[in-house]
Amino acid sequence: KNQRSVSNTSKFLIVIPGFLTEPHSLIQSDTNAVLSQVDPTAILDRRGWHTAAKMCCHEQVEVITYQWASQSAINLLAQTLGRLLPNIRRPSNLNLHLVKVAKDIYQAWYNAIKECDAKVQELSTYYQELGTQGEVYVLGHSLGARLAIKALDHLSTHTTDNLPKVSGWAPALNADDADWMSLDQLMNPPEILFSEYDLVLKMIYPLGQDAHLTTPIHQFLNIVTNTLKQDERKKAVGLIGPPQECHSLLAISLNLNDKKMSHLGYLPYADYL
Image (cartoon, rainbow, N blue to C red):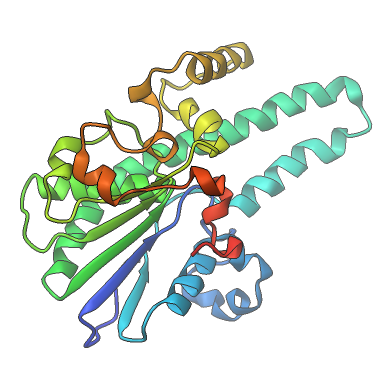
């Protein structure tokens, strides 16, 4: 499903959106192309990223939106409301269902991280294939940036020929998730956009770092442990920036603290793109 049509272009932009950017379940491949064109929720998922990226690029640049199982925001919202609305007038049950909703969100995030990491090999192969046909640029956001950078890290251990130029926006990975010193030595190290005002990476990202937790009390303790006592190497580089010893990475990366950039501030409808 990530195959591209044959064209004469020599420049490619691979866009890799992050968490909750899959279209909802009513949009199924090309059989619902008409529905997709009139679907107002398209701005919220990878279709919105694709449209915005194409508007920013010269017509000779082929924009490819990489698809992976990032979960659907609309499906998750429908599931959440399905739990809450029938119990809104029954306060005795509401707290229980709020806990279940929190668990649903945590489970979606946890699953998305696992799906993201499972795609690293496939994406690195895709980098290599496109690299033989022209210049490849990659823009990834959040978990999409995690995937983009880890695929570059994986490919660069095998070859340094035709590597893509990667820009990671608010990457959801930490100092232990990649060989940053090796990435720092590349001719084109990945660019990192980061901000300490990113509450998603500060509060939610740590939840996916430990083994799967099943009880509310364990989830609560995990939040406290990971947000209040987290060491620097476990914090997302999209929050604190690349490791300080990586001078080339630091030189090309962008600290967006002065803009107070939030996690949602990077999204297409926020106009940063």
